Structure formats: C-alpha cells, structure tokens
Image (cartoon, rainbow, N blue to C red; front, side, top):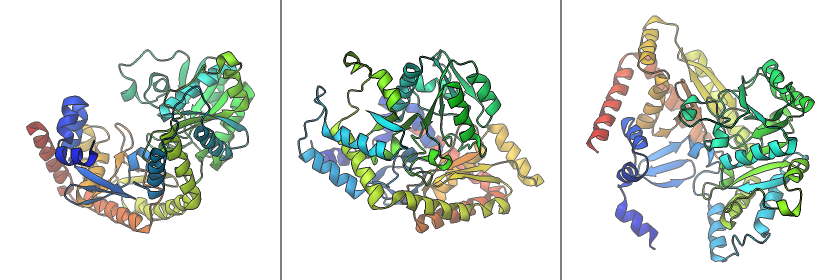
Length: 460
C-alpha cells in the first residue's frame, strides 16, 4: 500500500467522508465556525494546511502532543521497532517492553506506587481504577467532583459531571455520586457512611480548568485515609509535565493509591494508557494464579505503544521537558495576568504550568454589558466562541472552549512552547480583546463568519 499516494489522490475528501461514514454533526459544527481546514502536516507547535498556511496549535490534540508534533526521537524509535519484527502480543508471554515501560512509570511515581496496568486510553485506565478500587476495598461506592471529566465509556461516564455527556446514556453505575470540588464537609458526609471505595479526582479539572481552594487536596487525602477510601488521581491530562511537575498531584505532596495516565505518554503516535497503583491494591485483584488474567486488555501492551511511551519518557529526560514547561508556563502567566486589569471582559487567568483557563464574564460598562447580554441570550457561553473563532481566522491559532455553556477558553500548548509562540498568542489575544471592547463591528464580524460557515455547510 502506497499511503502517500492514497492520501494525495483522496486529499480534500475529508469532510465528505466524515459526513457520510462517521459523524455528520461534527462536520456541521466545524463548517459553521469555519474550522474546516485541510491540514497536511504537523511539526512541533504548528499545523500546516493545504494552502501552506501555518497554524499555532494551542490545543495539542487535547494535550496529547506534549512534545509537539512529529518529534524525531519518537518517530525513529517507532520506525526501528517496526523494522525489528518484534514478537508482539504473544499474549501467553511476558514481553520485555511492557516491563520496561512499567518500570519507568513506577520509578517516576511516589514510593508507594509499585505496580502498573497497561492499556490503550485514559478512559480504560479509569475503568481499571474503578474495578481495582472496588475489589481492594470490598466497597461499591465511588465519588467524583462536580464538573469532572473522566472519559466517555460507561464506567468513566458514571463519574462525569457534564450533563451534556451523560444525557440519554443512563442508567449509570450504581453507587457513584458527586461532591462539589473544594467542599470538605460534603466529602466527609459521603465518606462517613463507610461504603466509599474511592474518591476519583482531577488535580485540576480539564473541563473549565477549575481548581480547588488551597489546602483542599491534602485535607481530602486525610479524610479518605481516615475513612478507608482510596484516592485515585486522574492525571490523564494534568500528568507528564503539563502543570510544571511530572504529576500535578506533586504540587500538594499527595500520595494517591491509584494514578491514571495517558494522552502525552503516546508521543502523539500510538494510543497508550496506564493505571498505576500500590502493591496492596494490585495484589488484591491478582490474588492467585487462577486470577492472573482477571483484568486485561488485548492490545494494552502492544510493542509500538510501549516504544512510543519509552521514547516519550526518554525525551522528557533528555530535553528536560518538565522544567521547560514550568518556565514557559510562568512566562505565559506573566504575560496574560495583566490583561485581566486591562480588559473588562476578561475576568480570570488560572491554572498551572501550560494548562491555563481564560474566563470571560459580564463587563461593568453599559455598552459592553448590553452586547454581552445579547450574546448570552442567544446561547450561554457564546462569548467564548467569539474569542476562539477570531483567534483561528485572523491569527491562525487553534484553541478550544473549555466546556459547554461556559465562557472559558482553555489553553493546552505543547510543552515545548517557547517565547515565539507565547508572544504570538498574547499579541493575538490582545488584538481580539481590543476588538471586543472597541465596538459592535467585532460582533458583526463574528456573525458574518458564522453565516458564511452555515452557507458552506448547507451547500455540502
């Protein structure tokens, strides 16, 4: 098969094929907001379309491309693995590469973490965490925080705080329940019953970049210890350097019983995930020889995924990625925070490292407030699209709205982001904010963009 010949011959059919065979509603969304580009290449912090235009990627595949796109070390390692004809997925075997990746992940965790279960995604890692927690504690209830996002498979979805994701897919796992993030009293009330297996949490929530008040996580850990519940840190997005530490929970010196990882571990090439846990938790599940395969994943230890993970971690060490992410995050925060004082519409810049939320809100001045209210009446959270769309169309920067019906834009740039990319983004956001505060033409321009997109959508 000549892959590049196929791509060349069929280039430009992307949206037609997706509309016919995959998800036509996604196609409609992308065409409406004018995000229907034909990307042909990705390198570092940038994407390139069929017209040769360069786009700064501050979405990085929802955090997958921590090392940027097409990192040469990971690429070469995968080429070498394919050429080596490795004995892959023998199944009745103990392969070397899964052992090496597990060793690397365990060694980068706190000393209580001794075991790894390797899988294909963050959702799979969460599913494993639910099963292992229940088995280890002999309890059934699992708690999560409101606004949480832990994946879209049924078990993970049962721990999802987004109504838009849950609607129509119930009933969910019995015994799951949410507590407000930051509310220790609510958490203790649930734990006091003595039937909670685990408290599953994101150290910083991906949907909305919500943070708990200072001191909450250590206190929550103490409550879980007191009441016999396991702490499960979902580090699928926050882990591997995203917040300026290898794991985000390190900011509070936490010692979770279970840690889930994925996304950045893949290097952007081959899906890989892992659930890391204590010896006690693992031994409770794999408790005898006849239970050696009681939880498994057919493709979870495949050679290419293992090589991608190992190569990614080597690059983390060789290029000091975590320290670089910390420095770049500090530079980006320093540049963004003064804009809160400068612009009425920008209310907060929050997050850690290179996981940043920009929250917009109702302005004080009358003229701006009237425009804001008009946008919110059309659809709650619409203003955030008024930021994302011009960043893309006028400045060629790819970003995302952080959640449904909220005016929060999330930034997840590659961890290799440098001063050039930071300057470009800050200048672009300043331009968008100047336009938003300057007059009605900003809102009219957004309307035109949406109208043009709707026309393209309806013609296709």
